[in-house]
Length: 114
Image (cartoon, rainbow, N blue to C red; front, side, top):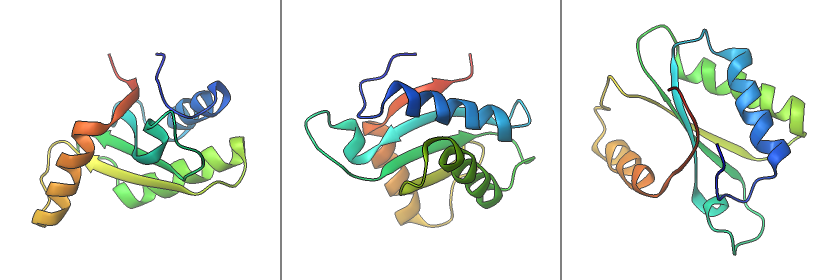
């Protein structure tokens, strides 16, 4: 999948490969970039990733830690923010739901399960 984001092809491949290394095969539904890396005219910035999951097999915090570790082992130490969002559950926190809704409108998907 070709995405218009400020990440190198190497970085994109590393993120997708990290998913393969930590996912049991059916939990991660999609990976998207949001934030400053979606603006091709900006410079710098951390890597903001939205990881959408489904089901109850995966603990979101453990998945985020494992993904961050895998990605950094491939591309080097980077500031990476991960939001893991379970599509089957809505947060009890309205501001969290609003944040997700805002990201969801501006995200650029770099991988999704077909």
